[in-house]
Length: 142
Image 1 (spheres, rainbow, N blue to C red):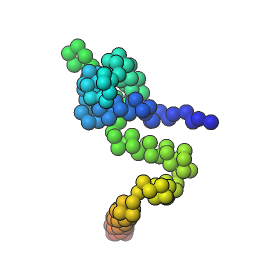
Image 2 (cartoon, rainbow, N blue to C red):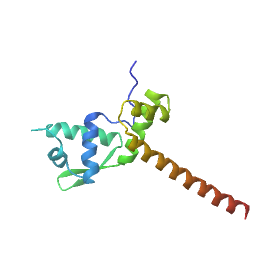
Image 3 (cartoon, rainbow, N blue to C red):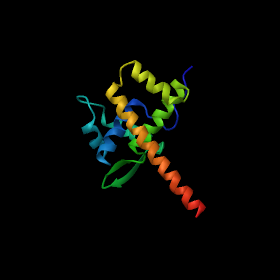
Image 4 (tube, one colour):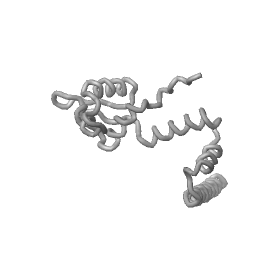
């Protein structure tokens, strides 16, 4: 059974357009078309239709500049990544980040060096949270 795409998820074609918008901050239909891969690439009207769909979904905003619209992302790249990762974790790993990391290690997508770096980041994050908790505790009791 195929799960319906959530409102936050992008189709592969939408994601390519969003990557252009994230890199430029905002541009016209032609500006997107000029930066998409492929020769000659998608038709102008196809990109325009997709930008209109993204606008309807609330993923981009459009502003009339002269005779054409300029499109800009309303959703941050990081926000889109976070949503896609949450969806992946839920759908494939039952919400378990540990299972995802273990799969990446088993399939050799993460090297020992990568894993060591991740471990340091987790330790730094844990230390920072512990310091914040101690400061909050002092303020609450004082």
